[in-house]
Image (cartoon, rainbow, N blue to C red; front, side):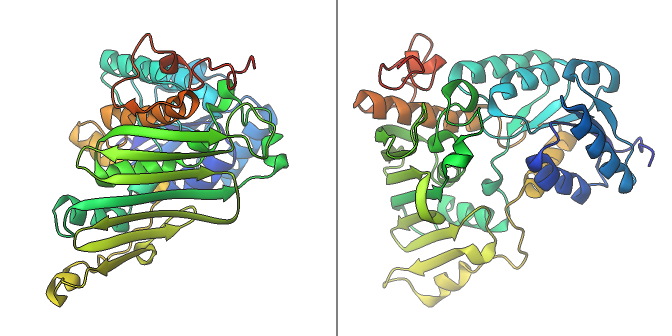
Length: 372
């Protein structure tokens, strides 16, 4: 299949399960606007398998084992990154310097210092880097955010954000998992970040965090469970739980507003039916009717987020899930770790250059750093 000049040209970096299972379906869904033309993979055998599979679908995907070589030869418009976390910062910066927009798996990078390096590269290139936070997207999340921000549910008062998943010893046997230098942390960074990013998307800026973390089961550098108490700028008080130890797995956000409770319950993705609205006794039926789910059901997915990025490219504006908005989520993770490891509350904006938690999520803490 030849490249059509009216379509954007995409390249993928990494050809593992997340690319095959999520990024490729997203590209296929938006085939009228974007086409996969190149792939980068350090394993020659896996690269050839990927190209063969793409060819079976009619796509002529050029293969490269080196990112810089691909960027120089192909000059893609969009680079989709699905490699282990420790590679995200350098690969994102390289793609930005080549003028490509980036859509990268979470976390976009491992520290606030790295995030600010990416922001500098954005400014120099004029391109943008977005991080995959697909739970923000889809009709259910958009509807809930509009209701909350528009005041339809009354003032948000109390929130709960829960990512209670289960990961066994085989999961952590993968060499880069559970290590600060390669994963950036435990379930706080690797799992729960999706839910609390959505919580921040729904409730806005946080102002203060108090937290605890522990290694209760797994012999890893990072935590296998963390909990936090959070205060938001709008006054909402929230609890956050991130666990890799929970046999009954669930992802949940609940926000109790003055006039209704909105709750999302799912595991790895949501639809309209995953959201429920429970009115307070004083709310009349006409208002409740207005809270009904949208007629169109768009699931949360890489497909929905890629569509938003392509819309932003067409309009020439910063895409959602990038810049200060996405940095806020990474700052939340850093603040949670700092609060947990120091036993002190952390304020938004506190972690700046010179703070040990700016350059490492473990902050050099003697009980948590890799040198422990």
